[in-house]
Image (cartoon, rainbow, N blue to C red; front, side):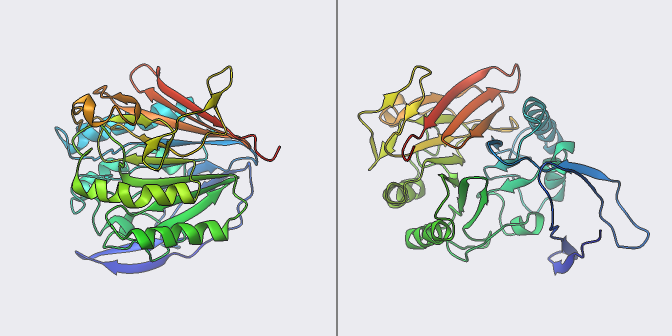
Length: 344
C-alpha cells in the first residue's frame, strides 16, 4: 500500500516530506520504506503495533546532541541509552524525548546524531520542544493535534491519547498561562473518559540544579501548578535541568500531608500531582545540584549521578509506575507507583 507524502520547501534550500499512515491494526508487524514512488527507495524497516490493554512508554531526559565533547560522542551515548531501554522493554508503545534534542538546531550533523539509533526506525517517538530546538523543530517531527495555543516559533501545545491515558504536551517557551490552560481544557473535553492524565513539558517546574530558581521557571510554576491541581493531572514529566528529581505528591505548591500506601509502597488514590525531571539520556551535559535548601521542601529524590539514565512508565487500568534506570548496569535508580481505586 502506498501513502503519498506532502512536500514543503523550508529554509536553506531543503524540503520537508511528511506522510500519514492509516488503517493500522493492533498487535501486527509492519514493514515500510520511503522513496520517490518510482526507482529511488530506502531499505525496508519494521515496527510492531501493540495489543490493547496495559502498556509502557520510555521517557528520556535531554539528549542535547552537541552539548558535550562532540556530536558523535554524544550520539554514541544516546545510542547506548536507546538500545539499552528498548532491549529491556521491547514491547514499548512509544518513546518520549523531553526536549533539547540537539544543542544547535541549525547544525544538521547534530540531528544526524539524534537520529543515529537504529531503534528510532521501529518505535513511534514523541518529542517535546526545548529551548535549543528552535524553529526547525517541526521540520523534523510530526506533532499531533496542535492547538495553536501556547505558540512560538517552535510550535504550540498539543495532545494525544494512547490506551486509557491522555497525554498533553505544553510548549514551555511560552509563558502564556491562560493559553496553556485553554489547551489542556480542550484536550480533556475531547477525551473526558481518559483514566490517567499526564503532562509533558521541557522546563522543570520542580528541579534541583542550575535552572531550579530561574525566573521563567518560577513564573511557569506559579501559573501552571494551580491549573494542574484544578484539572487533576496525575503526573508531570520534564527535562531541562539535566538532573533526576521526583517530588512528593504536590498540591497548591505544597507537599500533600497524608497519603496511604499499600504493602508494596504504592500510593493509593493520592491527592495532587507528582513531578518528575529526567536526567541526561546521552551524557552530553550534567548540572550540579544546588544547596539542598533550594529543593528539600518538595524533592522526595534528587540525584546527580553523572551518567545517563532513562525512565519506564508502566500504565495499567488503575495504576501508573515510574521506574528510572542507570544505563551502565540497568540498576534501578528510583521507582514510584500510584494506584487508583476510585470507581471500583
